[in-house]
Amino acid sequence: MYEVLLSGVDETGASAVLYAQHFRQRQFVVAQVDITDTATVQVQGRIGPDFDWVILYEFTASGAQQVTAMSQMRFEVTAYTGGTVDAGLAG
Image (cartoon, rainbow, N blue to C red; front, side, top):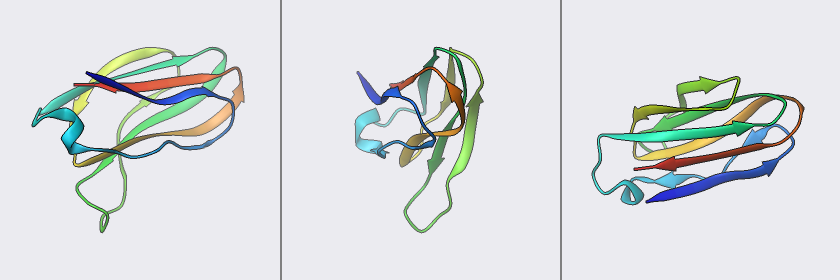
């Protein structure tokens, strides 16, 4: 199962939040990002709404990375120069 959290994004900002029930008690998930030009995209997680977001991995080019599954997860485009960004989580 996978969820697309960013699709055709062309600006900085955070995606919607994906909650733990999407991962069915998995310890790890795979984050995949497609960057068509130049951008920086972070996979972020936290254990609950009372905690700050932490960076699990940072992409500066298209790729995939296994990351720790957390109770709440999202992507954030922190730098953008051009092109588009697509990003999703599978677990």
